Image (cartoon, rainbow, N blue to C red; front, side):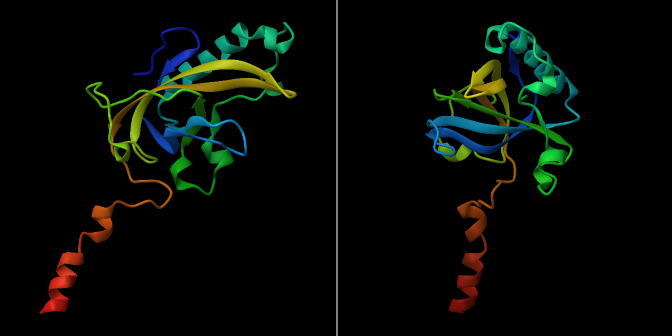
Length: 185
């Protein structure tokens, strides 16, 4: 499913959303408020991984001006695709997965599998599955150089177990009617 419209844009395969701040912008570590999400990409999705790596290469080429006109060694700059097994070994959700953090100053369009707008904010959350459009670009800011990931749009494709311990009211209160009946009898 992963495909590109230009050299630095990728439409992911099925990814899981984590740290999803897609409805309201949030300031992280006191920075500018942005919409953001971490995309958990299964290592088995080699197409999306290869497309992201190709987009990183294209972003390096397109951003040579940010790197003093010379192509930097990838080990000398920050890269957006990270290994969950290495960086988050204690988090089961990142096992056998890569992740990439994407953000934007503008709100993403959020649609369902039929490309109809999703208006219910409870429908898209950390833990659900989606296709996401991202664009990779070069940066050089305050001595930090690398490739960053811009958040485009989100297409929710499946529900998943909510991350971060969040539960639904339905799951919290599902069995209370039975308990109330037992108490009343």
